[in-house]
Image (tube, rainbow, N blue to C red; front, side, top):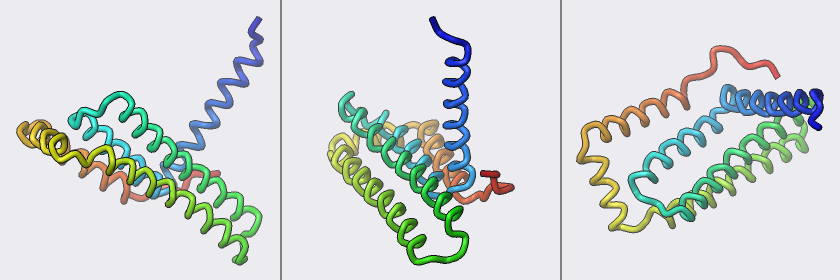
Length: 160
């Protein structure tokens, strides 16, 4: 039998997780860059016609990059808490965490290149998008929205 406290605890843990994701999106420009890339790549992959396995691999890579960025943010917060003043070890911890994100993002980009560098499919996808004013406008709107999303700073720093 499911206990009420168990359900409450589960809901609370998901709520905390979503608060953490929201914190990253609001306060971390790199997270906004990664999310914008995910949206743009997802849009393009639809017109490119990725197979199910290719799409699964792409989504796995996107999830890994977003997760790495979230872990990096958590490490930075912990380092700032433990060492508010400059310390060389604090810098090393932050740099190594950021390096982990960079490695993950580079690997995801390489996977993306492998998936999307078929000249015939690339040409067909570009033609599908560019032959329709609605699709071309959607791409332009997505790019404009991504730039705004990435470079518009938060109105206030979210409380930890």
